[in-house]
Length: 509
Image 1 (spheres, rainbow, N blue to C red):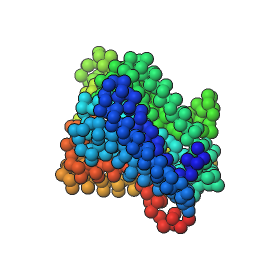
Image 2: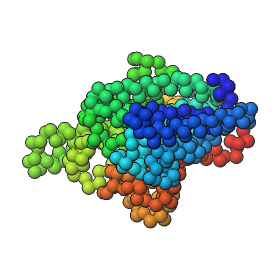
Image 3: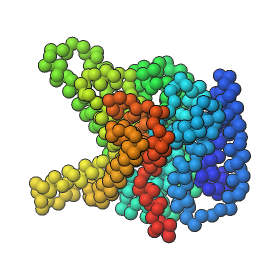
Image 4: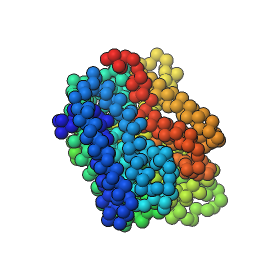
């Protein structure tokens, strides 16, 4: 293991991807899908051989800065790995272009979940591969957020850090991100600590869904999609799942891992200590408030109108609509993108012409820092809220001095809110830029805005429910798909990380 860590990070990631290609082989052989089995076996063997040669050639490479090289590898992974991951997919499906296969893998690896293919068009082994790639992308984010982004004060950690984003590491009680620690050692330690947790949670959810009545293949794909927030499904979402409302209730419980890193980060222990940490976590509490308030608003809007027309008898329909709203709100807030089987009733119940706009706003907010969720992140929204609250107080009492929250509270209201506002502006500029480029390809304003937001927030399912009519990815041009692929990578890596990577001071360090 120590010798493997001497290799460049991108070579290690290529080796892991090559090994994962053998997993669909076992499923394909079981169901006698020989074409898929050969495609993945040959591709896995070819790329594994290539990785061995690359490992030999790059074994003695020693970059000037390991932290900088790892951040570069993080960006390069999303640019290079999809070309490798798309090859067996392209060979197995045979009736598509390599470009479409590449777009599918970019979408899966960034946990966006935007698909060009109807579920019935792909065999089960290819659905499993899409889910595996999304699942690997989620694990990659879990580990690199703690091992690479946190020491550089990026990925949301800059809101609570006293240091400048990208300028160096800070100590973190939870992540133990010490600037003096070898990045390779930190990467290995956190991978060994967080990897088994990620795998175990996926296994528990898989077994729970099978017990609820789901088919094993669909259950494992949904389990991997929930933990990675990719929303990839071998069927048309949860509306076609056999587990029903029980399966949705089980999945809802696992959304908590996309709202707070304190549910899985090393350093909090288990049992009552971890539960207490999650209960006190700002991001988890904000997520709970959103899950309570937004469905209540959708529900009460119809309920008040129903009293006016004396139509309040169907309590069962009301409860189903409330459940559909609560589950779907939690799903899009975590940027997973699963819609409840009762969401259609919720749309009718709310009386809104475009309830998908609510889901777009939730996906924009996103989940927690250092989780697999995309979006702006709840911690940044909280920093802006605290700053706004303080400014309103000063309008009433201009000479007041606030000490609420101690030094952490003062930092969040000032420096934290400042850097959160900068990120929000970068996000808005990125949204405007991607929308303009999509508009230049022939898409109208509504389609451009929905697709831009779905890519930047890594919630590809917004294309289906965000507007008045569903947007079909396969119907847009290849140029638009290329723009969306770039936006997916930008939304996953985040603009601040790219700016830090392009900063001359970062390279001179």
